Length: 501
Image 1 (cartoon, rainbow, N blue to C red):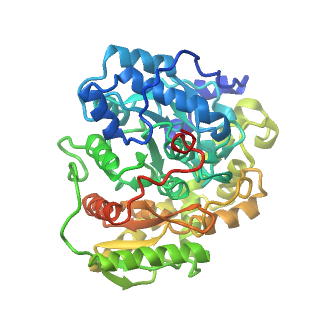
Image 2: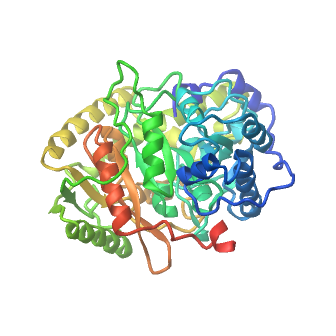
């Protein structure tokens, strides 16, 4: 979320006058060449060797989307004809040349609809392409369209009233997580090798955990520009969700800011594990002092044992932050955008936010939450963010990495966290469910979800590792090591192209 996304001027005013739905995907003859089961760099290698063309790679992904999207609802704005044309025109010789991907529907792409999962924005078309996306395109990716997201990325599940629920490929009755749920579902089902994602409170790591993928949230200030005018307290960052560590490592090296004057030194391309043994802080209780569900606790403990067997030092710790104060300050920032949205809708329509019917109940509830705060609440919350950052920086001086759960449960069933659940009920469910991820956004530190475990029902459970600011190199090296020690590349969801091939 950024100020431009919320104060959209004429685009938002036009959206008030009527709503349009996404049109059907273009139909056509699809080549039989398959990229099923390959990661992005694997697809690029096949294209580079001449085994398939960029057009055939795009057609293979489009065929998979057309086969599976009806039951999963991951892709909400296809631009297939444009992608085929770009493949025919040539996509350069970058490391991802010809690799089909999706952008999350919270990110601009010039000339393409960006709904942000909201009925308010169904007619909005982006008028610019951010440098982050330009960097991906310079590396050769072929963008096939936009992926499903909750309204303005405000929930940890992808079930917007505008775009419909996104279904988890591991069990279609369960949530993909949010807010990058469409991106994660698309990758988990094999529609694309990797997909763009973003994280303002866990939105890369949560769907990565829910869908059995690798997801790295970079440090704040690490990545190339994605917003024209960020809001105060902006804590969102962009990267990807992927099946392989190497795809995420390559994407980071491509899209991190590396120009003179960059806030953080570039990580560069991390290509494999390190021989350094790490001091890993470990806990399973959240910042409220509560344990996660038993299957999550067992999974994270298993990950700690795995790390110990690899020679890393595991140190039991307690999260040094008060959950009650933290979540109140965090949601004050989180709810400031919805408060602006509600005011804008009411001004333009002359109706209350509820009567206008353009914003979801959860979004309106967040607006009311913010509007009930004192006038200085936003400034106080931003100042608190600084205090917590200093506190956690000092705490981290004794450790290289911090291991904890991503979420307090395995993926819940769709509907349990729907935006139509009464606000107070949904508030309680949400703050417990995501009680491990927002701290890393507030402090700006990098964190990742690694797909090491599943529960007895076959649902994925990610393990979260965090590092001090600009510690992406440490995290990626550890991820490569974990990937080799407990591989996940051959584990495919039941509702995927690999399972149905």
